[in-house]
Image (tube, rainbow, N blue to C red; front, side):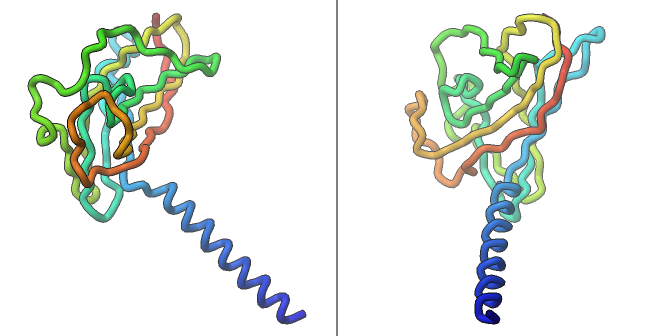
Length: 179
């Protein structure tokens, strides 16, 4: 019976170590994002321009990319997703746009797209909403940054090595928006 208890305690200890390591991996991705909406104008909340604050929560420098023309639509890595969810639980679609996308004419690839952050450093990036608000009401707004190397993208350029990979998501914010 003692042998059974010893094996049971060993198994329980190993299982708990595995769970805590997995939890730590999920909680500390090395990058956190915070969404800051612009101030209200005449009592009305606007979505643009919003500011995303990226913070390096790791103990080593990390690199991320500024958005390409099309990153907000999920056409190019990195994806800069501003998700706006109505009271019905459905995400609002992005508004229409032309099909031209890719690198911005005024920026050199990849040098001017790379953001390098030291441990604990934060960088702000302005983003614009292109959503069609169908009606006045309360909406939930969340921002996520996603970069996965090797993912098919409409960008024909080679992505630089050593970029931070994964998804970093802001806390959701409830806002009253007008059509």
